[in-house]
Image 1 (cartoon, one colour):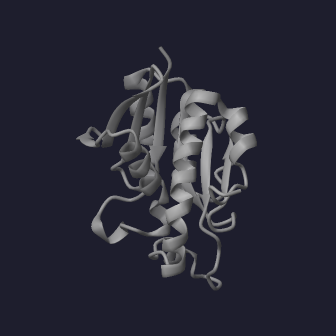
Image 2 (cartoon, helix red, strand yellow):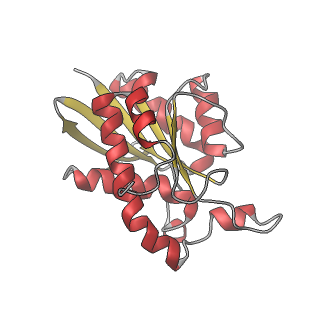
Image 3 (cartoon, helix red, strand yellow):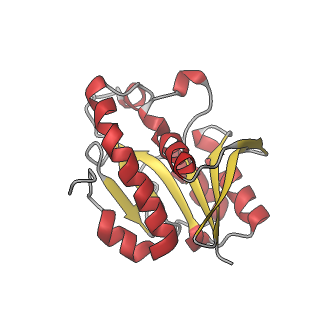
Amino acid sequence: MKKFLIVGLGNVGEKYDNTRHNIGFKVADAFVKEYESTFETEKLGAVASLKIKGKTVVVLKPSTYMNLSGKAVAYWMQKEKIKTENILIITDDIHIDFGSIRIKAKGSAGGHNGLKDIQEKLNSSNYPRFRFGVGATYSKGRQVDFVLGKWSKEEESALIERIPTSVSAIASFINGGLANTMNAYNGKIDSNK
C-alpha cells in the first residue's frame, strides 16, 4: 500500500498563529479537517493519519520550529518508511504572488530556512514541495517582520477560497501524481479558474 507524508511547515506557539510563515500549518489543518481526522501530539510534531482511496496519508506539523524542520521530516519518513517522492512539503514563498500555488518535484531552498534544513537532513533537494505565495509587500530590510506578520483583512478573506484549492491540490498529488497536479494547479489562485 502506498504511503504519503504531507508536511505543513510553520512555527509552534500562539504568537505565530495566523502568520504568513505558518501557511503550511493552515493548509495542513484544512486538509486534515476535510478528511475528518485530527492531530495528536507525537515525537517532533503534531501528526494525523488518514486514508484516501486505499492510500495511507500521514500529515505532519513539525514542532521543531521552522529552521529545524528537517529533523522531524527525516524522523517521520524513516518511522513510516515513506519514500522521498511520496512526501510533499507545504511552505510559504515570498517570491510568488499572494495566493498563487507552485508545486515542484525538486528545487533550491530559495532562501527558505525550513527547506534548507530539510535539504540538509535528507541530503537531497529532490523532494516534492508545494509553495504557497505570500507575496512580498514589505520594505527593504523588513522581510522577517513581513513573514512573521499576521495576514491583512483582505488576505484573510482571500484565503477562504485559496485554502480549499490547496486542499484539492494535495489530494490530487496523492491520487493523481505529481505531474498531473503540477499541470492542474501551478499558478492557480482560486477555485473558479
